[in-house]
Length: 328
Image (cartoon, rainbow, N blue to C red; front, top):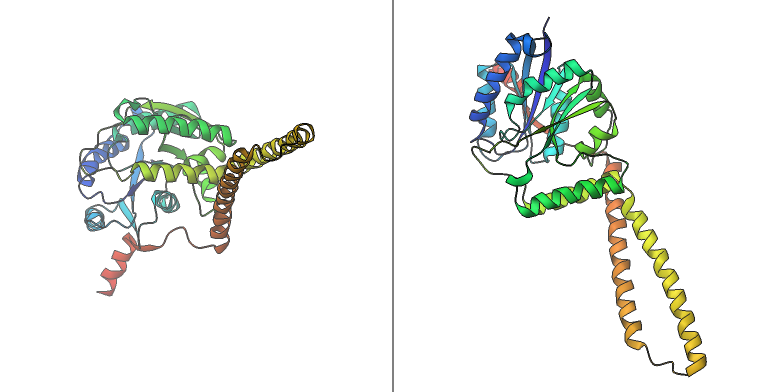
């Protein structure tokens, strides 16, 4: 009996690239369902789970059409744009497979690598096969260096061990997927969650494919915001840094006070040093506001968590089409 592979594909305004993606992924699905020789003697049935993250183009209409022509193509559509992290969670929740593969729809995660990932998972005994970029030259100067700095900072501030260039292109066994779904937090950083739950992961390098149509949804500003959210989600490091700097400034202030007290006793000149005092007040005031802002960010996340709002709201899925047909 064939194993079931669920392929989860988050989508946001991918109408242009989806036909090209379907052409490539269909070839791979046919290959792994009929030729077990390339995957340690195992054949796989497949289901494609597209998660429409509130697209404003014709993505949803196209997904409806794909499902009508092929029942193995499933979809979930959000009521609005909730973000990629919510789309990943929805896809994992709806996946029924013994194995679950997560990938993007823009073909920058090449479908042709799926048989190699399955072969590695089946032969090595690991729980997950994850892919990391080894060709950062295609990215812009800012994005390349910012990404590298992010992984270094994240690993320093948290207890995670993220691989530089890690992507969401990942194949997992069902036991690992279930562990991920047991984590109920609202503010999610999937790369951190994948690492935090443990399990034996095999990392493989790959070259990012070219996007044949459409454009990237990740601007530099969104990447910076996403990185900041990731650090706050998995590290109390910023709070520790604030506390450490606060202690340092208390010690410095105490030493400066002693210095000026002794200087006044000896020279009797209490007025000198006013500019220094003025600048120190501005610096300390600015640091206090910065630290309050960082603390506020943590409080805001606690506030969002205790509300217990859903991570996403489903407006439509393939079951909705069945109900419409029955009612008609």
